[in-house]
Length: 131
Image 1 (tube, one colour):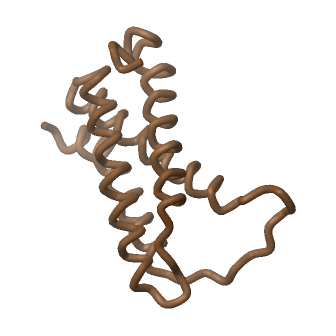
Image 2 (cartoon, rainbow, N blue to C red):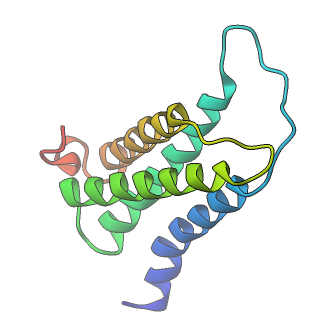
């Protein structure tokens, strides 16, 4: 594997994982939320959608593995990082672990991986037998 392949496929994935872990370790002040919309879950879903897409991109591009394999790697990446950050947050003052946050992480990650595979890895053929 060349250095260019590593930088262009795996480095963005690893950098985003590191950023999510750092964000989990920091207590942010509670921002006011619009009525009827839990923006926290939207932020979780968006952040993990990017993680799912980057994981699928790394597998479909650098590892030349598409479809089901890329999706499974993305799913387990999102599951591991989401679970890990929720555990970290249980020990950070001002933060709390929440299973609903993990659900938003998984929903976003799955959506991001499927969207990437659909858009950039050959449409329905890129998803293979995932769906």
